[in-house]
Image (cartoon, rainbow, N blue to C red; front, side):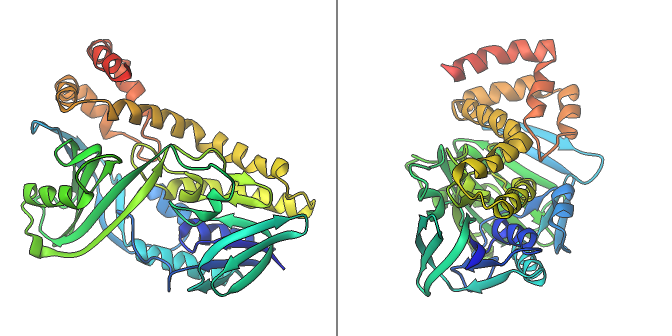
Length: 383
């Protein structure tokens, strides 16, 4: 019997397995043939996250600024003094994290598809297309449509957003500046991105659920607006992201991490930072549970208390901002551009912490002139 079986060989699963494998028998099962494929991430991370991953990164570009394009064409320029984010090869990162977990003693089996589990006083029986597995604990790191998460009952995230991105041959005017677009034309309910790297650009978008058009149709519009010919697209990826968290990230002999736990930043849709913060807490909780032979829901709830104490406040504030944002019309967004298009607001956004972005809103609203002009827009969005 394994001490823990981790379902999912992406970063959430391999970072967790690498920590646990130091003193425990850990098995990771992944349905795909390798870690990192299919790629479903823009690959933009902060330098802090890069350091927390603990492996050498294949850095495609360093980003120090952004042009935010509003619905009517207004451009808000953000320019930091230093590097704000790194564009990395996510497939390479995922594979290196898997190698690191294996080096630390975790066993990784690829091409194994998980279908369900049954939990008893004696342990966990996992059903896969390669036979049954036995474990003391099951850890769900199986992504946005986690079967492990749904084994805990009605455990859906508050919402999903749907995304698509492509790598295309295109030389951007500024090598270190990405372009973000907001509004209903290109990314209703979220935003689009264009991230340069050499003679290429990673271009994509997410949209809220319920739109009549598909992400692919919006991508076509975005390519045209960016001056990118369809024939210059060399690869394309799509997926969905759980937003707003799930009701539970634990149960009897069960823990969740990453997208499976809904640990995604509501404003940006990023998840690596959350994984890096939650994994050590999960590791500590599992070690105590196995040492004391207390693997019930009551004891494992300490994990959820721990990660929410660490990153829950940012999630809560970020989701409130997201709900306000989704209620704003294009006209409202253009009014906001008129309010923030000033040097003191640029100075605030130049220093934004991309891992904790919600704090910027409080700093902006502290300005009496800005706050008073924002108030009618916010009130309309809340009604």
